[in-house]
Length: 116
Length: 144
Image (cartoon, rainbow over all chains, first blue to last red; front, side, top):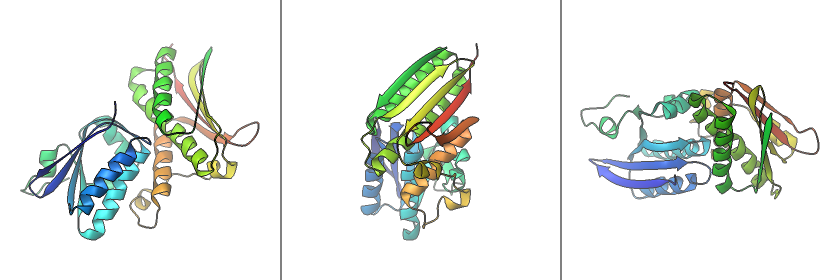
């Protein structure tokens, strides 16, 4: 399945809903969209991975790139994901210690102060 | 024992095809259904690595993938990049992942290697026997 990208705003958060396969071929489009969001002023980005069927190292590299761009700007890149195969990828690469991970967009954007 | 061979131009668009073929052959070989996601990811990582090395060195040579089933399911992904490039890969320590000094390319390579090592119990990266290049050899059990 091809990559799909959709952006919406939830309060002060920019939510990027990603679907399909994120790999060496499609990851540049994800990078481009994340850079557009940051360039347009988004400082809290939630990437919703719950419709992603496949995610590889190039996709992970793009997510880390967004995290690195946002951090010095006082922003953050959080991930919404409750799919065990993807969560295992984050654990194996230790990236679960880098990103705030939430099971859903609702949890990631909870104004009462979500906790990872 | 049966063997399936695939060779493709070093372009990112073909990595998905390699994954699909690799998983289809794994399923037919009898690899357990619950391992197929890991097979798909590992083959993707090995092929991505090969494609990136060929692009880095400007090599038009085809990336080769050979799948065989005997007592187990074995996938070999072969690149033609200089050996020192291929064998220089190491998994990154976790605390290095978000460090600023690490280039995006180095980070992706390190993460890719961490995934390969994490998902493949029987993994070997070694020089090819003939000519220049590296072979990533991955083995999974079959349920026959």
